[in-house]
Length: 304
Image (cartoon, rainbow, N blue to C red):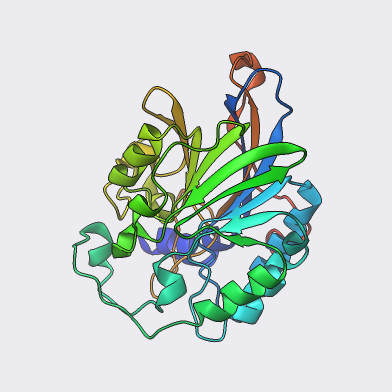
């Protein structure tokens, strides 16, 4: 990158909070639409006040369910900041799984390792994920780590299951393996890192949709080419947004709302939350939208 591009990526784009909207045809005929707010990869630092305000304002979208796919923390003192960001959303039905940067703080590293990742994992200091978990559970959200649940969301049964972070090899899919409840209008899977081996397992068990984060959408994207890397085994074309996984399952990968404090840049990949409207499978293609963005949702979208 040239100096101007680096200045833009570090000083402007990484704070250009964006709402991405998509419609996904995953429900049975006759089902009422469900609206899911998908949050991921906040990587919160205590001083990131504009991010906290913007996320809290997302409550005005009136989602039926909030899904958080992990990597909330980037500092040992960030739990209160995350709770301020989630704020009113914690009064809504919510589910979550954690990612590597809930368990361990990021560490300084050579930026080139982002473009040439390795299997070696270097953990930072432990983070207070148990405190964050306790606070979210106290407000009524469900920890779906290696758990299967049947929840009633807007009067419809939703079967949800989640796993621990595959990026750290903490996943134990065998704990949740098996067909979801047949009474469910929606069968939803959660994982932080969208590793293909995990996605294949969800698809084999008959899930309709899996939500994931971790990739940051590539974080650095080249217009006309896309993400340079995904930081996992997922192919670059699926680094952000919705795609099909096999014949019957959809995948949605959030580009996330943060970065490591040691790599605070984004290019052609603004930080985002996603509002997913789930509709019946027979919905005409002309009635669907995928990837529409509202870059200025909320009054504080560009205020530090």
